[in-house]
Amino acid sequence: MNAPDENPAYDTEEAMIYPEERRILLLVNPQAGGGRALRVDWSMVGARLGASCHVRTAPTPADALAIASEFCLTGGEVLVVAGGDGTVHAVLPAVVNTQTRLALCPVGTSNVLARELGYPLGRRAVKGCLQALRMGEEHRMDVGVSNGRPFVLMASTGFDTHVLARVPEELKRRWGVWAFVWTGIRELRRYQPTRYRLLLEDREQELDAVMLVAANTSHYGWFTRIAPTARIDDGWLDIVWFPMSRGWRWHIWRVLLDVVLGRAHRCRYLQSLHARRFRLECASAQDVQCDGELVARTPVGLSVIPRCLRVISASPRAPSRNAV
Image (tube, rainbow, N blue to C red):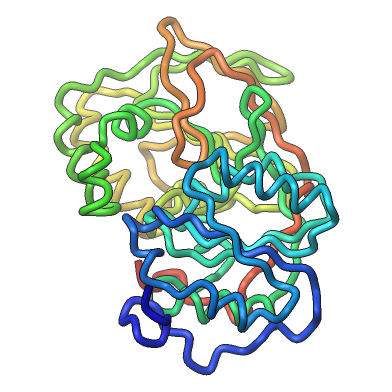
């Protein structure tokens, strides 16, 4: 592996060592970013974090959860996840409702939580992580729950989940986020919207929708914000859906433009409401994804646990449109 400062993809020059001797685990997903994580000398990064930092490699989600669980149960103070949203999702059951703080080194294909917390991406990912550990702020973040499984970003069903299930792994490794765009365009003609029933705490609502998202964060994917009013610590899920209507395949391009520009709350083709808990049913079972991982099928119960996850945000925050 190359040293980070010799690798054009990751810049660690002038990075600061974490100033306090705290027990830190640097958990590395070697598959992150289609293998880009392998080009970083993680032992050097761990050395910059201080003598109390241990570096562990987790090739699979099960490995990541097992390592993180042991660390959190034994009083580990800072868990640094070097990977993407999939790796974060894998360790959530270990970190939620503990004293362990979660920090990010966003070197994955998808780094939506990193964007939400202001971490720089691309060649500044490692340096930004080290700076966050030195200067970042701790926040208590809400966590969503889908049929007992925690998520930090969103749970959704419909067209986006249909596409997610059909992206070839090889295409994802080679093209990254563009693999999802290409697959979405290919699947647009054949997808058919679904009738859903929302069982809220105070009422029921039936709707025909192209997709439905229960968002815990404002960011959805890449640069998009499907729920720009969502907050990570407000104790609510923002439910956003794209109703089926005549010509919805043309309208989807306007929806895409609005979510990229952060004005989904003004998009006439989207509807939304807030809920602390609800149940989602539909006539035929549909796939459900959480944080970009296929995890269940409808019917599904969703809820939020307020401020149960300690996270370290970047300081200063990177621009919202920082490098992919």
